[in-house]
Image (cartoon, rainbow, N blue to C red; front, side, top):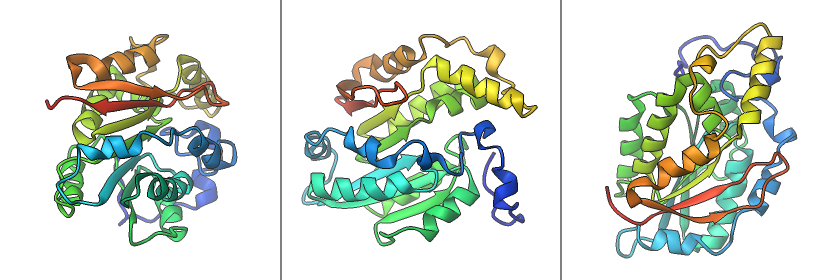
Length: 253
């Protein structure tokens, strides 16, 4: 699904009346039960300057970030302020989400409009690759300094299958020099399926998935294979029993 802003938008309450069965994880009040501040508190303060040192052109004092699945932008706003403090650089963030109503919220509450931009994009659409390239070109870049994918991999997997998750991981590997990934464990998949069934819907690709109980380990092994990335940090588990994993580029591909 891609965003078509030319179509009339449904009433917000109607589209999100059953947030527990959001097909793409696009919960309208997500940050009411998964605090953005608590996620930021888990981030390590020491890695940001190191991750930017090898990724920027000479004399470039900018730190360019992609936040995939930004939801209503609560975390994106706090992340911007955090990175300004910890990189000592001029931070620019592009937040993208599949849901036009959530992007409207992002834009409405954006306190850093000169440096934080939001777009309604489906990262799995090949047509959006050119849009990301165009965004990077304005900074003279071919990659983002950091790509954030927090609590998103399950929704990519459920809606696009094993091959879709593989494609997503390859995509972010090509896009970033530092990858910040918070994968959901298999028990979260089962919970998502129960919620969808209660609403009379389902994830059609669920039965086809072969990557299951070891999905977190599979994601990590996929990202570090070929010696292009290495794990440099993992947080303690969040209250949802998820770890935020940090992967640093060590070789070109």
